[in-house]
Amino acid sequence: MDCQQIREYLSAYLDGELESSRLGQIKAHLEECAACRRHWEELQASMKLLRALPEVSPPEFFREQLLQRLPGRRFTPWYARFRPAWLRFAAAAVILVAVLSLARLGSGQIIPRVMWPWQKGGDNAPLVGQVDREGDDGISSDLLKSSGKESGSPPGGEERRVQAAPAGSASSAKAVAVKKLPQMAGGNYPGQEQQAGGAVKDEQRGERPVPAREPAPGLFVLNSPQALSGEKEQRAAGTSRSGANGELREGAGGGDAPGALPPGPMQAPGTSLPGDDMSSGLKAVKKIMLVLEVKDINEAGGRILELGQKYNAPVEVGEQSEFAFIIPGEVWPGFFKELGAIGRVREYRVDTRDITPEYEKLEEKLGLLKERERELLTLNREADPAELVQVQEEIKKVTEQLDALSESARKITVRMVLCTNSSCQQDQLQVK
Amino acid sequence: MHPDVRDLDERELIKRSAAGDLEAFSELVRRYEKKVFTVAYRFTGNYSDASDLAQEVFIRVYQALPRFRGEASFNTWLYRITANLCRDELRRQKRHKKTSLEEMTAENACPGLPDGNSLSPDEIVEQREFQEMVQACLNELPDEYRLVLVMREIQGLSYAEIAAALDIAQGTVKSRLSRARQAFRQKLFGRREHFKFLSRLLE
Image (tube, rainbow over all chains, first blue to last red; front, side):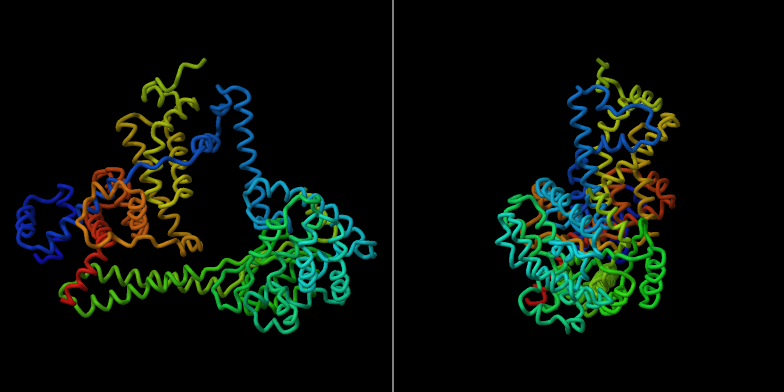
């Protein structure tokens, strides 16, 4: 038997499962072969390390959750049975909070603006969440008013029209808004008026027949250099960070109770939001969420499905007039432009996750693996054939991961919610 | 007050649980949750999946308890269910080939054992950092290898039990375990060899 065969038997040898006929052979070989002896020691050590791993405690509320999940539960949960009343309440409160947090996260895809998890930084900081909701209330009623009178021209409604304006123009309104931020820090309503200046201008552009003619702001920043043309100066003017995200957040901020948030935290999420990666050539995964206001949801839905076919991006239809699809970044501007003919973009949000570090790490790993593979191939007398197979498997795996990463960076995941004028209002109501 | 379920012996708890007594079942879970969760965690490599899996195990146990006749010990029976569910999980994952980004970009933290100083498993294994590294190396193994290693080394199942749980021949268990162990050894010690090999070349 050669070393390789001997090593195959070491596992059974370790378990005492080796046929007695082989036993002597293995023992004798280990006596005389230093390499196999080391292999044997390492194998033993590996298993010892594995066995020595400590037990792991399940997460908090593991049992409570489990009892809730039991099918056909016939009894009240244990904590309701023998805990004092206040504790029961506490347990219920904990569950309620958990459910609410989930609801907040879960709703992010369908509910516009303020409820999106990354809105206003920290999706799970309770304080921020609370303030958020106050903001919601303010903004929801604002929106209700504004969308109710949209066709007219409500006095002092400029700021609201910003939200209804096409995303492209909304961004420039935002540019104004962000600059005003320090002044608004006190929560003074005058801030809104200043903002309105920018908004009025946009509104004029927004009234052109095809509202969303210009691609949305986040897009330029992300990955469509060709789309940059029209608004380059705006971007260059240092407003690139104020993508759609910030704009919407800002709109909510304007409605906030005075002084509800200090300027710092208020600004932070907006500025930390992604959308800056194009120029630096980073790899990033992009998600776009948008709300499209249409006249007839069924008709618009049909047209969106057709668009999906045209752009070779199969559209999935979800509940509540939600659509989702994955589309190559380079054709998204075209798609988006055509959306403008279907309806009016009421919300537009880009979420970007930088995956450059992961990518580089994988590349580095691949490099090491290939180096090892070369060594194994050129110096095979020392090499373990099993290792070569493994290294090659690993190379294949890492290459696939790299491809998958590149692929996901090349494409944009888009989620879209359709609403009619009245159902957009309902959405707002539901948010409340 | 209820008589304290904590004082009840296992047989009594099983009997009551089988009859739908959730208090008894809760106590039964309390006694075994750590063991089951550990297996699930070592197998899945992350808390969230492990938690789901471990809960599935206990749900299955709860459903099957009325049919538990006590031919094997409860412990063995529970471990068998755990092993079966791990296997099912593997099949499920294969069907819906997981491509979640989280997974693809999961931090590679299996650098292998540091080269140099002589190995003292007893000392080194106490370090949390080191334990995490061992788990990371385990995570990097092909799923079948990881499963069989967890069954053998963490659950302590026999070849026959593993064969039954995976529905494969004992001979297959033997050879798969051998390959799994060698692969795991390679993860931990491969780089050490690599460096030593290089230094030998330089001599």
